[in-house]
Length: 210
View 1: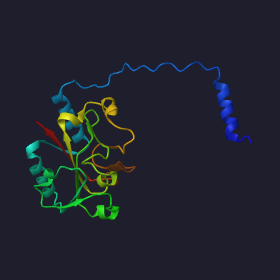
View 2: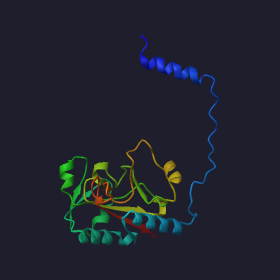
View 3: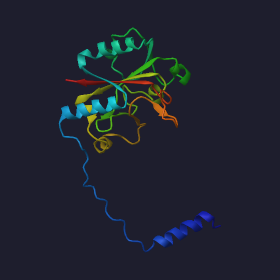
View 4: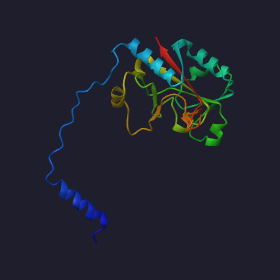
């Protein structure tokens, strides 16, 4: 039995039968508009993260636990979600209750947790974007969308790229990718900005250098 769908597709095929081959797509465009200098790329990442209203810090590796502890204390964090694979040393300087997540915490339980600390897969300088892929230290997507504060650690040495074209080959498209550009925000018709509607109200990014 011929359906309407079959008839439409048959007409499309007949119409395309004599069409010319699709031309080869040119790939000679720039993959980055940023000088290939690590310091310049880090400065651009810092600038664009801040432009999206993320709060950006730089830290040496050995100062990271103390900085995370200060940030959590400053925001009055009483509980913090801990994704699988997060280095235990990162949370040695906080008095907040640590809530390990193995996927069993419900959205309601996550909503009762003040903050989450994660690592990331990549950070993109030209767009000020943090990419999570659910790998070690990052956790499932809900973990970084429900708590009100997200503290994300980025390693400058191997997790920062200049552009999206440089990032894509390093990401696995089969993984649950979350692209974060600043805290969650939306605006109504009057352009009144409201933060924290679809995710964390506050994004703190720590760039680990040295």
